[in-house]
Amino acid sequence: MKRKLIAVAILGAIAATTQAQAQTPSMQDLQQALVQAQKAAADAQKAAQQAQEALMQIQQAAAAAKSSQAASSSAGVSQPAGNGLVYKSTGDMVRLYGLIDLSGSNKSNANKAGNSLSDMSVAWFSGNRWGIEGEHALKDTDGLKAIFRLESEYELPTGNMDSPGILFNRDAWLGLESASLGKLTFGRQNTLSREFSKTYGDPYGSAKMNLEEGGWTNNNNFKQMIFYAASPTSTRYDRGIVWKKDFGGIVAGAAYQAGGVAGDAGLGSSKAVGLAYNGGAFNVSGFYNTANVANFTDTSYSLGGNYTVGMVRLNAGYFRYKADQPVKFGNRSDNAYTVSAKITPAGKFDYELGWQTMNAKNAWMNGSGFVPNAFANNSTSSAIATATGKRKTWYGSAFYHFDTRTELYLAADRLNTDGTYKAAQANGFMSQNEYAVGMRFKF
Image (spheres, rainbow, N blue to C red):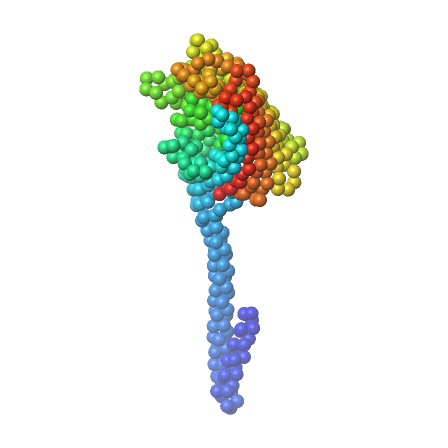
């Protein structure tokens, strides 16, 4: 291109000189024409260089614009399917998320008269919730970041708070996390034993143990087994300190719950340790948990796992629970077992089936004659006697997934008790059937 411009400039200069001189040019005229041609060539070369530089600037601007657009898409607001509303910038992330579970159900023996109840019930599988969580990268550290979560639960049929007067009843914690430290959190959060049994407690949790809070199902007759993994404040800690770390296939954890009682640091406190192995198709986990419940010692431990073959995941677990009780009653001891399966064929459906038995020996009964959950207050003055018997539950479900955020389900369970064991859910009867249809939406 440069050569063409130079040639055109030379020819133009010669033509202009020729037109200006009507007569045959002299040697001086030719020299002057040559000087003008050289100047025109230099100007043309300079113009070509400027054009090339302008082109390079345009290309650089286009690349910068493309890079800026990509950065803005990752640093701005987005909404991945089912993962909430996320804001990200360099070193920071905040996520607003939630889950809505609408359930219609029918249950037998819904009151002391033995009547059935069909109703829009509290969520069958997952507590309705909304929450905010985030992280902030800390400078001059080995990948350390500050993390937090605030999560609230509400009841869809009425809009009431799940725990009246407590805004963030599910989670309210602050912590630190890194590859070398693991995850260390302080505040209200799941018990460690609940976390380390989520992979086999029922078929609805993750197959592998991870550092994220997970869980068991919410409101049904097979939920009660989760209380073997509880604390003095139910299946979540108040004033909890929890550490978990993935060592690459091995996950370990430890927890302490402060009692918060002046003059008696042990009252209302609990301690737990957990260990899990993630082996791919085969995973195993367990925990040891002990607590001071109203100055009585409650202890539980568990071992379980799951195995996946093809489209079927099989889960099984064992729980052992011991509780000190007032001398007039003696101590309580339970053995509990669970077996379940999750079937995920190709397509939009999956299916779950499970069975569990909770075998209680010498468990104190409250003033209504029902056996309380594990880790309940053993010193209550309303205790009237003890009970020995089994609580057995069959359950099943089927899900249809529209996409990763929206699904429909059918579910059912059957509760039976024997001996002198009576469950509060069955209102004094020895059995209860429950059926549910529902829809879940994640945002």
